[in-house]
Every structure is written in C-alpha cells, then in structure tokens.
Amino acid sequence: MGNEYTMVSKVLCPLILLLTGLTALVTCPHSKVEESFNLQATHDLFYHGVGPAWKSVIEIATQKPESSFCSEVDSDESSNVCDGFTAAAGLPYDHLQFPGVVTRTFTGAFVLSLIARTVSFIVPTSIVDLPFHPMAVQFLIRFELLVLSWLAHIRLANSLEGYLSKKKQFRSKNESHTTTTQSIFGYYLLITASQFHIPFYSSRLLPNTFALILTTHAYTEWFNGRPDRTAVYLVFTTAIFRCDVLLLLFTVGLTMLIRRELHIVQALIIGITAGIIGVLITAPVDSLLWQRLVWPEFEVWWFNAVDNRSSEWGVMPFHWYFSNALPKGILLTLFLVPLAFLNLTGWVKERASNITVIDHTLLHFFIPTLGFVVLYSFLPHKEMRFIFPALPMFNACAAYGLCKLHAMAVTARKGAGWRFISKGLHVCGLIAVFVTMVGSLLFLRLSMENYPGGAALEHLKNHFAATAEISTQQAPKWEDVHVHIDVAAATTGVSLFGQRSITNLYPIQMSKSGYEAENDAKDSFRSYTHLLSEEQSVRGFHIVDTIEGFPRLDNRNLRIVTNPAIHILERDGWLPKE
Image 1 (cartoon, rainbow, N blue to C red):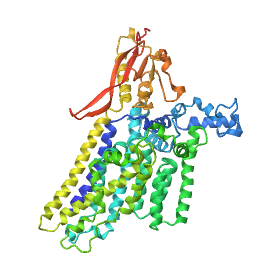
Image 2: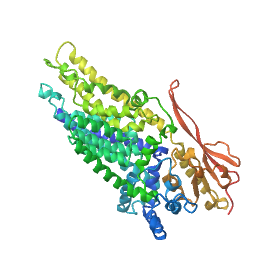
Image 3: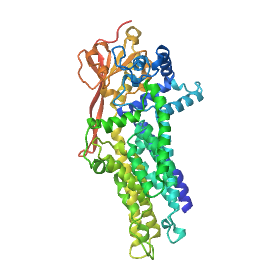
C-alpha cells in the first residue's frame, strides 16, 4: 500500500502543479505592466533578434571609432545624451522608445526567445508557420517559463525528500507503518499547487519569476548538502535578475558561516567569482540591446538603495508582509508552517522518552528565509512579488508539518482517543490545503477580469474582421487606419504579440502612449481612426465597445463586480470610400 501511494504521489502531484500553472496561463493569457518589459523583449528578440543592435554598434564604431558604445561622453550640444542612443532611435526595439523607470536585463528574455526560435526552426511551416501566429508564440514563450518553474519545484521536492530520509527521527517505531519520506514530495507539490501566486506567476515574465526559479534551485542544493552551489545560485540571481536577493544571500550566507557549512575565505571566493561571471553573462547582451554600457541590476540597486526612489510607487507599513502579503499568499496552509518545528510524532508513540518540544530539522533553513522577509520589511515600498523567494521555504515547512500530521495518523498509540484525534488533525490539514485551493481559484477568477487592455485588443480585432465583411464599395482603406493605445490599455494586457496578430491581417498603423513625456499623445487624437482608451468621451469619436475591469468581490451578494475600464472608440464618419 505504501509503495502504491508513493507511486501515485510521484505522478499525480507533479501533474496537479503543472495543470494549475497551465490553467492560469490559459485563462489569463494577457500580461500587465510589471511583466511588459520581458514580454516585449521576447517579442523583439524572436522577430528581430540582436542583428539590428549589432548593426547599429558597427555603424557607430565605423563613424566614431573612439566611442563605439555610448558611455560617459561630453555633454555638449552636439552629443544628445549619447551618440549610441541617438543612433539607436531607429532600431525596432520597444524598450528604446519605452525604457521604463529602470533598466532591466534581457538575459531571461534572450533564453526564452532562443528556445522559441529553435522550436520555430524545427517545426515545418507546412504544419504551422509559428511566426505568423504571434499569440501562439506568446503562449509558447510563457509555457517555456512555466515548465522551467515546474521542474525547479520538482527538484526541490526531491531534495527535500532526500534530506528528510537521512533524519532518523522522522521514522516511527514500526517500520511497516513508517511515514515514508516520499510523502513529503507529494505534500510539497500539492501545497504549492493549492496556492495562488506560484502557479499563477510561474508563466509570467516578471524578473521575480526568473529569480524565483533560481532561488528554488538554491534551496534544492542546500537540502542536498551543497551550500557552495546554493551560494552560487543566489549570487547569480542577485547579479542578473533581482538585486534584492542580496538580502536573502546575506541571511543564508550568515547562517552557513555560523553553522560552518562555508568558511569566510571560501564564501568570498564564491561571491567574487560568481559575481564576476554573473556580470559577464548579463552585461554584454544588455549593453548591446540598451546601446550603452550597463549592468541593469546595479542601476536598480542604486535607484532603490541610494536614491531611495522606490517609495514613489507607494508605501506600506513595516508589518505588511506578515499581516497581509503572507496570509493572502499562503492562506490556510500558513497554519501548517509552525507544525514543522514541533516534535509531534514523538508525542503519539506508545512509549515516548526523551522527547524534545522543538524539532530543529528545518529550523536552520527557515530562519534565514524569515530574516529575508524581516529585512525587506524595512523598505517602504512593498509588493507581494518581492518576497517570492521566501515562498518555497515556507511551503517546504508547511509540507513537513502536514507530513507530521500524516505520521501521527498512522502511528498513533491505541486508546485514549489518540488515534481518532490524530486522524482528525490530519484531515484538518488536508482540509486547509483544499480550502486554500478554493481560495486560489477565486483569486484566479478575479484575475481573469484584470486585463481589460488585452481583451480590448481582441475585441478590436473582431471589430476589424466584421468591418472587412462589408460590401466592397464601402471597404475601408486599411492603410489609413491608425489605432492609438493609451497608458491604461497598454499596461493592462496589450502586448506587441497582440498588436502583431492584428497587423499581420490588416496593414494598419498602431501606436501607444507611455509614462514618458515624449510618449504622451493625448493632444493629437485627430490623427487616429480608433482609440483604446480609459476615456469614455472623446470629441469626434463614438464608442464601439466597452471592456469591463477593476474586479472586486461583492461579499454580500457573493459575486464578482466589475466596472467599465477600457473603451474602443471609432472616429465619426470613418469607413472612407475607395
């Protein structure tokens, strides 16, 4: 029976985690502003590659050999910020027109687009011409990231199982009723699948998602007894994707030094070597595509730590991660975490002796992760995604706690109602996981209404298809069609993949606004035929369709309430004659 349970767990639980992530990908195919950089970057790298950037660099080097990259050049009237950036203005890259608040790395986008281009090369065009189906390319790229995330969590579950199998106290007195360590594998994946954030964001091209994958591998190596590899993963993550993982590197590194898993000289060698390699991985491709010498995460660190400008995007109280983010992110499975540090199995043996209250098995792994959240709480600006690296360790502890309830249920001593209580507690733990999954499904349903810009672009495509079916005498001249996308639409689901899915069918022009002053087109609506806008009334335009958004749960009526978010407007008197 135990072997059958293990086999089912090994197959079913990974499949559940994959299906929950895939469900989020299919039901919420669009992206928001936080993901836009990497999503637009994968589009540009898939369709344009790095060739235009190389060509620009070569042209600059040919014209002015002394400044092949725009670095610190003299800021006289003839040098507009930097020669390289000026020359880059005509490059087909979205990030040069919409650079955002801080620079970001192209490393993750480069890898994903390379895989997608390889798939496109392998699959014959007679089966599917992948580049001609932009939304399929977008799905493929996000699915690649989902698989990479999924494999990272399977690795962690395996390493957690291997680590606990070495702990004698995890086995009961009767070997036939052993709470086999294989159960921790299934429970970790099941708990992770039951929550909202990891499955939902596993396919979303946030820098935090790339960082989460690497930190999950870091935890895996730590459980495998290879702290040096853990340090390498954390240094790479800090240097390439998220400089804030430096806090986790500090708490984990300090723990390793205290426990003598690493010594100071070894830690310094690992940190310096991995840091240099990390910069050498990220800086060349980023400098090429940004058309200037840049190490993105250093600029992000400077923006947040030195300039302290992150608070411009909102301030939360110190306790917010503990009072709001973690309870919402983990839901009822949070109650399983403390059980990992209580010696429950010893209390239900028939003859317990020398029982200690505290179980230290995972304590030295959890404390630095908790310290990471505490240190991050000092930063005024807070978001749930900032503490994603902590979630796998919280889930590992929750799984260990549930595993102990499982152990109590099968090894409890007879009499005094112990068996009934133990089984009841195990059932309560499973109910906590089930309720968490129900809550996550509710969050997913709310999220489906959270991308009105992407939905508006789909509706506009359908509107054009219906327009194209009118009589040829009134057929539109598509070359005269010019669509403008405002900031609200651009940041709630509009992507270059979605835009290309329209321009592949109709030779129209599309432009969008951004936060940058030079990308604000509010005063020139007269040059457009269609608008995707949060503005309901624009002179000279009429509403074609309205997309709902801003979802919230109406607790009284138990329903999801939405409000008008994005309007599709068409210029009065459009449909010019041939």
